Length: 259
Image (tube, rainbow, N blue to C red; front, side):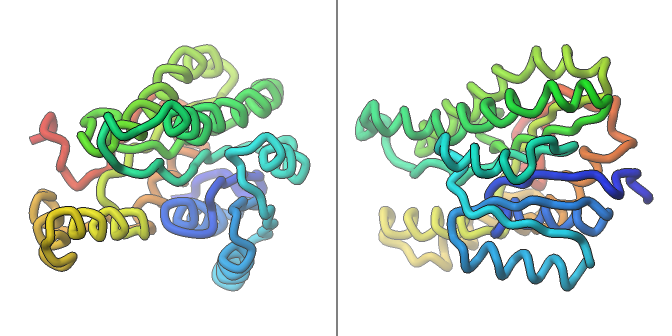
């Protein structure tokens, strides 16, 4: 399907690995000029080269920590008027509620709520004025199904969901959409690090933890970053203007409400 976004520009946060890289690659294949931001220079440049070689797209790298004001300023200086914005940041660490300090909560909210809000606030008016815009926030399926060991993520991501809900409706008449993608268990470093921690806590092997985790997914497998990227690209397409203010769950059927 021709998505109708060739020649558009896109910012993809945390775009050097995992789900962000999947989105960047999928958009690049559609002829979108992409600006990918990440903290690590080596992974960022390697990803940019790979995407260029694979797609022929224009890829600009911005080494920045977008969870900081300075990082966001650097990214927006490189691409001040994107047509597409994909917000993304690494999730806060797991743990027990009683162990988290107020600073832990502040860091989680800054990274996973304030950062997307700041980037949206800086770009949404321009999108509305030009009559086209697509914002995709990568959050988590914990927004719908909170997980006990991920309170920091549960709270910050749910806060973002509520914060952009009404804005999505106000932007819609201008052909600007805002949607949230809620990944469940995908084949990423984040999932594997969670398995490692669970194995350490339980005294089991990581292989056993991984098998049990995959067995609990109705699809009986992890999602792939390619699948995730393809969904993101469609939400950013010219055909998706009637989809806005939605939480798009991608979890292989794991959410109980879908069973």
